[in-house]
Image 1 (cartoon, rainbow, N blue to C red):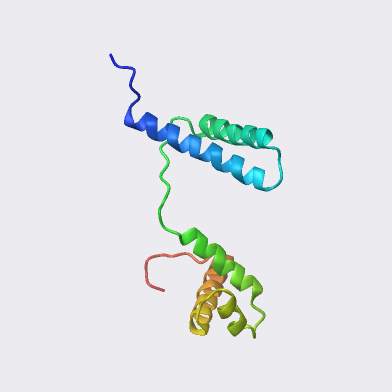
Image 2: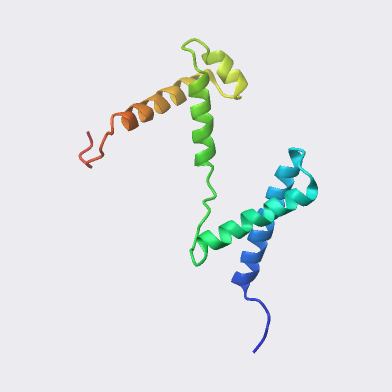
Length: 122
C-alpha cells in the first residue's frame, strides 16, 4: 500500500495552508509580530478543522455576497440627493444607482415585513 496522499488530501492541505498563510498575512498587515500572526493563522485552521471536520463545504465562485455588501454600503450612504456622487464614488451610472437603491430598498422592505413567497406570483 502506498503512502502517497490522495488528491483530496492534497486539496485539503492546500486549502488549510492557504487559509493559515492568508490569516497570518492579514494579521501582520495590522502590525502584529510575524510569529504571533503565524500562530493566529494556525489557530484559525485548527478551529476550522475541528469545527467542520467531516463536512463537505462548497465555496461559490459568484460575487453575490460582495455585491450585496456594496449595495448595502451605498444604501447607507444615500441621503436622498446624492445619486451622482454615489455613481462617481462606485464607478457606476446614475441610472444604475437608482435601480440599485430601488432593488435594495424593496428587498429590505420585504425582509422587514416578513414577506412570504407563496408561489402565487403576488
